[in-house]
Length: 302
Image 1 (cartoon, rainbow, N blue to C red):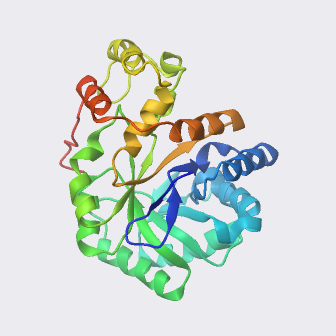
Image 2: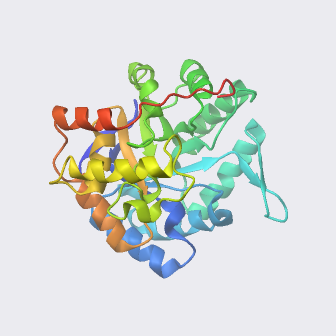
């Protein structure tokens, strides 16, 4: 598995990362998927304290403990479960971040977190306080680097301007090309993109319309998807659709890793095979860009 540098850090992360949210709570099944990921050369594992009330972190900690010095663990902070655990609230305060990191470290069974990410963010947040908390955690050695997981351009812009973050995790795929609007800014600051959802909830896989519903997907209606998805496959007939989708995301050098979830070993291996397939040519990229929409973020609240 090829590696790419994450921002200005010394982390060389695998081009495909494992998004851990879809692992579930079956420890045996999750262990099989994580082991297969390691066998495939994946060294970047992305979880969050929110997933399964922290159990996801526990599962990842147990499975990665034997290879802790060979992998990079990323987790997230900012969402607090209510006492009844039926909903959560947003808390990016410095006090909460410094408290939550200790809980994550305990669940992960590690002394440090390689990449600690703010799990959201709004322009109304006290960003200076949030950034100061991350910087303090770096000085203490509890985290190595930090980033944000956000699709809000104004939040991203403020963090890039005010902090020393190394990454921004954002949804990015052939069906959601909005991040391309901001890639030049991030590349200029040497901030890497961690692309989540590169297969657009399975729409950009061989199952295609099996994963679609009448509501469509983002700017695409169901009828548009019905017309577009076969075209994306047929125009590059020698490639499987998931290979086309992953190679499109990875064609952007600002992307450090495409993080895909996997609910089975087979799905994981298919994603890794796709990532290791041949890169897209300029002509192929041009065809794909003409077929899809270059949407932009439009909400003033973002």
